[in-house]
Image (cartoon, rainbow, N blue to C red; front, top):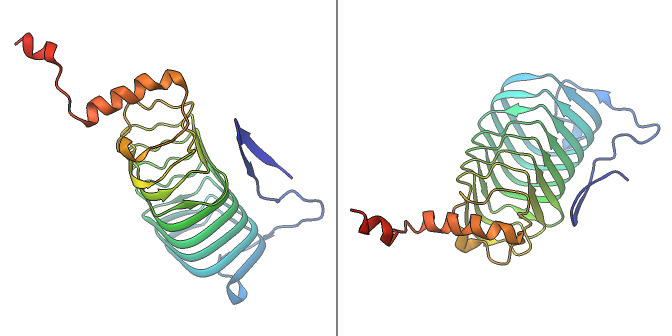
Amino acid sequence: MDTRTIRRTSVILPALNEPGLYLSHVTSLEGGRGRLAEFHYADADLRDLDLADTHLLGGRITGLKTQRARLERLRCDSVEFAYCDPASLRWSDSKVSRTVFRDCKFMGATLENVTFDNVLFESCRIDYSTFARVRAVGPVIFSKCTLRETAFAACDLGAALIDGCDLRLTEFDGGKYRGLDLRGNDLSQLRGLASLKQIVIDRAQKLQLAEALTTELDVTFGEDLDDK
């Protein structure tokens, strides 16, 4: 069983290299009776992708590009996404398990009411996106991703770890984050610090949080007033 481990957090990876497993090349993600298994969907360039009430089980999706993508009530089990760029992505009411997103672009995406369990985001661009009511019921890792100006609203990410990511103006607005591991990041430009109770950081990051809080509270330093 392949895993990816950073500090105390381990994600179980998709089981796609099992002996005897053959992934069939497919030209569509719409399987019979709403189920697609043991597949490889590659290099599609679509204007629109609308996928609903579908179960993706044991497969790879590589090089997928869209101008608009809508995913609803989608279940992903043991799936690998690589080098995908689904523009204008709206993903809702879904569950994602044992899934990897590697070198993908989710610029300006909206994920709402999506449940994660053993999910890895690696070297992805997720800037200007919104995660609304997203829950991590199992381990989730964001590794070497950019999350600039991304908003986490009313999420439950206590089982998540964010490591080596760009968190400039990343905002947390309500939710549950007890146990969220933020070590290994620059926290000096975070927003919504009041939501981040009982997170895990290194002692050296206390100054970064202080800087972020000073900016968020729009503090005026007395020395600056005295110099005027």
